[in-house]
Image (cartoon, helix red, strand yellow):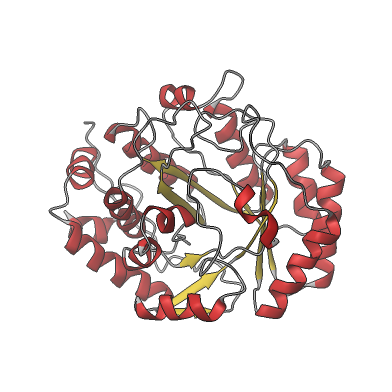
Length: 355
């Protein structure tokens, strides 16, 4: 199965189900995944400077610690000058990608976001600007793109509509989430998507739907991480997602999308002290240290016990570099664009059987 997945970048649903539900093939899976990531990216691990500039959010997603109904969370917003200061510090440290991430905060108008993006683009012409601001209109995305943003991260979280409805309040829909992703593609962004692993009510069939949706979207970036509960959400009593399953899915994603940019996420590092190193060995090739001001890092609390000091901090480049090197890879101070696929597979190569 692993060799077939490696060769064809696909498996029938019934084989994907077997692969997802057992650890029997993990060793071979990770070996092949590492071979593929080295074929495309060598030992390079790209770093992105993460700026979490607001923890206000108009949404009430049932799994998220910054949901608007969490009245105990200490909220914050960074000003334009504070965001630019983060970029200045990051650029001095060698970062060439800035990721502006926040809740869906109506305080920042489209014009304000565009002004911030334009100023970053003017000051740092050799850098990539990634936005992760949630669901917006086509016109908003287009405005940000014209201002200088060139990447956008928007995880679909689950591609199963029934499952999506169990994770989100009325008024949010998978249909709109997907529409946003297709709009971003059409405008010209390098698009990033992804999903939670082990979220409440998730089944193996849901995970297979996630993989099938990503095959349609063909994103440049794919971010996944284990679900980790937050105490101030309706899902506070649910168990966290399985770390080993998350790693297995990273390996599967690497073989299905050999040229993708796949981060070893903060959630992996929260689930296990060696989680990000495990993610790199499973096929990931991106890490996202935190450039946010130290005093607000612990306030961007998507889930409980999120790591917010130490080696994940952007200032600790040497610490992070040592850890990545110990895993067998090297930090690269580079814009880190997605590499082109080396060859296209025939359109009729896929053989899918429904579970």
